[in-house]
Length: 259
Image (cartoon, rainbow, N blue to C red; front, side, top):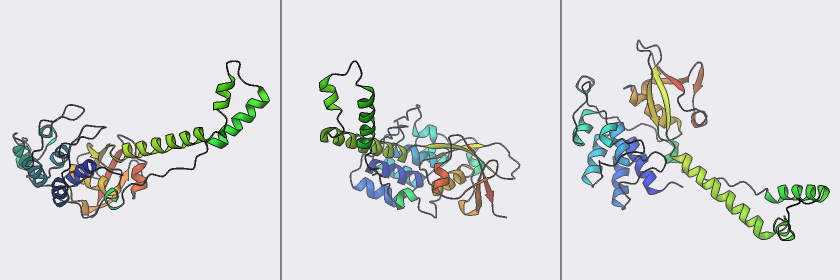
């Protein structure tokens, strides 16, 4: 289950001003950092160009000097001139020509907000595996280094061993789920059929199709509503969350716009 710090970073990432305000009022740690990449809510809001959220976070005491695990501050990640000004920096040279429009909140709600992650715990199979191992041991004889006490500890019928194995499995699955929930995916993306054939990199903060579409559209300065489909090169259509989960780091995508 996501922590309040994770919820704050996700709300800041998609520019949900109301959710950010509510979480701050509840006393959440405003400078909570992701354990994998060190990003805070201010890093995400600055990177995505959500000036209202950036202003709110700064007014509530967010530390703009905190750096990510690769040494970047919120100002280093900011692209929009208005956001850079709020952080005490200068607009980028190409920002005046492109305009300082804030990224709009996506019309769709990402699945990681609609449906909180549930950790599935598979049935323990330790007893069956140990039974097979014990049968082989009776046929082949115990190892030369085995002692009576160690052989007794490995008996599959031992309730303590079975409970320990089950608890280890639960812990491993829970930690894996929590780590995956916030792992950032970096993809390469461009507009299909455009004169500019080079790719740009986009950060996807949650493995959902909604966030993939929103992130890629924001990086390319196109309206997400104008995207007809997302294509993984050379010829695979990405349509749903399961497709996004199968994407690899650095994969190449194209946004096909509606005619």
